[in-house]
Length: 66
Image 1 (cartoon, rainbow, N blue to C red):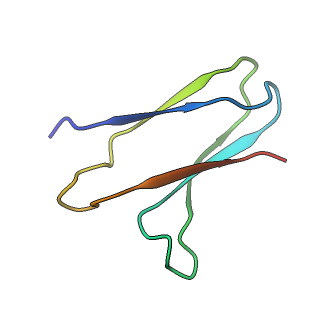
Image 2: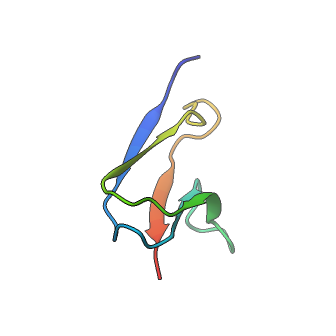
Image 3: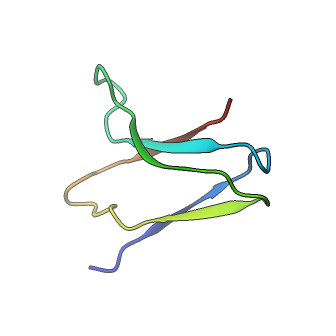
């Protein structure tokens, strides 16, 4: 019940970025945005509590930054 996964983001400070996740890379539109933020310092840690192995056997993450 208390499963979590931490993603550490190293991006350009002060520039907005979007963290996205996918559970199936073969889907037509697999990526779903988790959050968009603009932080003044890096690294940035995101804790994902939606990682129950029985419901989602794998999860992929990516960061988009202009």
